[in-house]
Image (cartoon, rainbow, N blue to C red):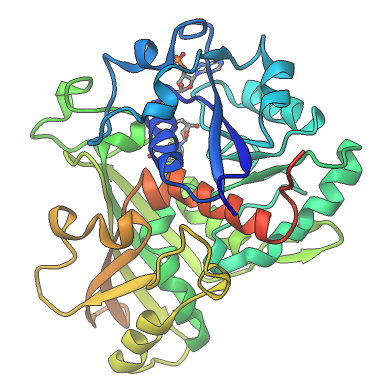
Length: 362
Ligand code: NAP
């Protein structure tokens, strides 16, 4: 199977959009055929539109350079006809994103979204493929509501979560009761570089709008059950979270404290982390990390500089698991926020949807 599926990217000029563009370059199934952004970028070639703000370490892929940027709103019908599905990562008001994504779905163009706008829409699955792949069957109920045959919206969860929820998930087997989390989040998570956000050099900012609520609530929906075309969120574990912006370009770190109903051993916990794999590994999806979680024994790991690109940014690194005086254990997690936490996580989600027949060629 060679690049048979045509892909459009909405918000292609932004931080996450650029990451999508680079991930499409070598993708075995997905071929980039259309890029879209706001009216400010529309009408220019992709290269012209991004040349002053290209933030990736590799050059702009050849297949993207000469594509003419479409206006995501004014050219919606045209774009929907040019792609078998779209990825969406835009910076717009929530109600406008909801309307935009629903419009594409109704145009029979599936939307795999990075945006938070639809994360709590009852029949929209919010998927971390290793954890809750089964939630994609919500799409049947969503299609019935929208009156579509092909079109639907699927979303991925917030980027902050990816540094600790994958690690908490296998530990739930031991009756995980509560978790206290502090995240240390990279500036690319705000769509920024140091050039565009000089105030972040040598600085920390103890506030990221809306992030703490998302970090505490979204895991419970991810761990929820599908019932009557909706998700019934899990009741626990209770999570409390503080999110801090730190002077790092890529990579969200989380310091995590956990308490169990019945305390397991350290060796049991590390064993569960190392052996955890899910549906993407079973299906051998192209973007699936072979090892989802690596456990590092060194006292000074995981480090952003050394570990953020583990499994091409799709794996999660965990270290420093040890006993705590107030909680049972504490540990540190790290993930790449624009790969696993954003574009890469959405690409993996699209691969899962294709493998289960929800994304098809037109
Ligand atoms: P960004 O760098 O600011 O990019 C925003 C994109 O939205 C640009 O392509 C921009 O196009 C486009 N846009 C703005 N207004 C538009 C409009 N009216 N119509 C169509 N397109 C419009 O933002 P980002 O960091 O990539 O984030 C994008 C989304 O992903 C946000 O919802 C964010 O919360 C989410 N997200 C980001 C991360 C991350 O790590 N950065 C992680 C998870 C989720 P122009 O260039 O033409 O203005």
